[in-house]
Image 1 (cartoon, rainbow, N blue to C red):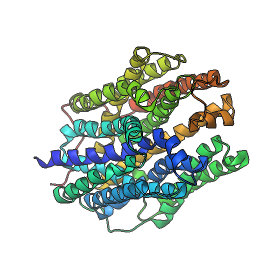
Image 2: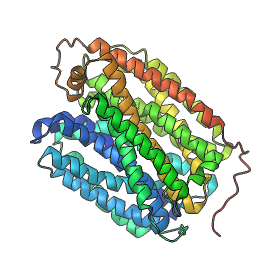
Image 3: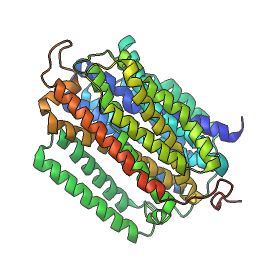
Image 4: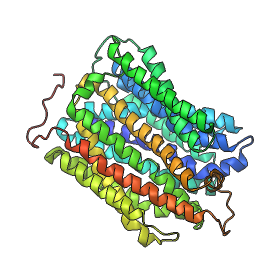
Length: 482
C-alpha cells in the first residue's frame, strides 16, 4: 500500500476511536450510576465532561511538542496511552476511579487528535489534502454519533465495562501498525524548549473557563463561584496571550494568525463547533427523555441520517475543494446546516423518523460540506514546520467550542426549567410513561437551542468569506522541503 494511504487508514482509525469514545459513555451513564459503587451525579458528569475538557486543554500543548519532538513519535505514544486508559476504565471499581482513568484516556486522545491532521498533511500533496482530511474529519463526527449507537448496543447486550474493553484489541493492533508503518517526514523547526509558564497558564485558564460555564449552569459552583471561575479563566487566557507574545519559544505561535486564511478558518471552525457541539447531546435526551422514552438502540437509529449524510458529503466536498477551492463549499455547508437547525427548532414532542430525517440530513450534510475544506485550507496555509501546532489549534478550537456549547445549552435550559427537572431528565430518573410537568418547557428549551445554533452557523459565514480566493489551478505557494 502506498505510504500516504497507510497514513490515512491509521489516523482515521485513531480519530474515529478517540471521537467515538467521547460519546460512547453518554448512553451508558444511567447504567454506570446504578451499577458502579460510590457513583454520584457529580462523578457521572465528570465522566463525560472530564474527557472533553482535558482533551481541549492539552491539544495545543501536544501540537507544539510534536513539532519539536516528532509527530509520529508522540502519535504512537498517544495510541498506547489511550489503549491503557481504556483498559483501566473497564476495571474501575468506583466512580472516582472511572473519572481518573477517563482522564488517562483523554491524554492519549489529545496526542492522537493533535497529530493526525499534521501527519496527513505531511504525507499528501497539496492537491489531495482536502480529500484526505475530509475522510479523516468525517470520522470525528461519525464517531461521535455512532458512539451513541454502539454504546447502547454494547451496554444492553453485555455490560457497560465493554464499551471500554472493546478499544483494547483495536488499540494494540493500531499502536503496533503505527510504530511499524509511519515515518517522520517533518523537520524540527527549532531546538526543543518547552514553554512551561505558557502551558500552565493556558491549562488553568481554559479549565476555569469551561468549569465555570458547565458546572455553573448546573448550580454545582453557586452563582458567585461560577462567575469567579469564568472571570479568572478569561483573565488567565488574556495573560497567556501576553506571555506568548514575549516568549522566546512560545507554545502558541501567534504569528500564525497573521495569515488571513489560517485565522479565518480557525474562527469559522470555532463558531461551527459552538453551533453543533451540543447537537447530539440534545437529541439523545429529546429521544430518550420525556415524553418519548425511546430505548437507546431505537434512539440511535433516529440519528443515522446525520452520520450517513455527513459520511457521504465529507470526502466528496474535500475532493471537490481540492479542484475548485474551499469557499463555495464552506458557504453552502454553513447555510445548509443553518436551515437544518431552523427546521429542528419546530419539532414536536413525538415526531416520527420520517419527519425528523430531512432536517437531520441537512445538518449532517452541512457539517460534511464545511469540515474538510475548512481544515484543508487551514493546514495548507501554514509552513510545514508548524503543522503540528496548527493542527492542535484547530482541534482545540473544536473541542473548546463543543464544550462551551454544552455549557451554553445548560444555561438556556436553566432559564426555562428548574435545575431539579434538568437533573431528572439527564440522569434518566423520570419514570417511563409518567406525566412529566416540565416536558413542554424541555421542548421549548430545545427549540431555543437550535435557533441559536442556526444563528451561529450564519455568523460563521463572515470569516469564511474573509480568506484568500485562489483559482483551482493556482494553489498557494508551497513551502515543502525538497
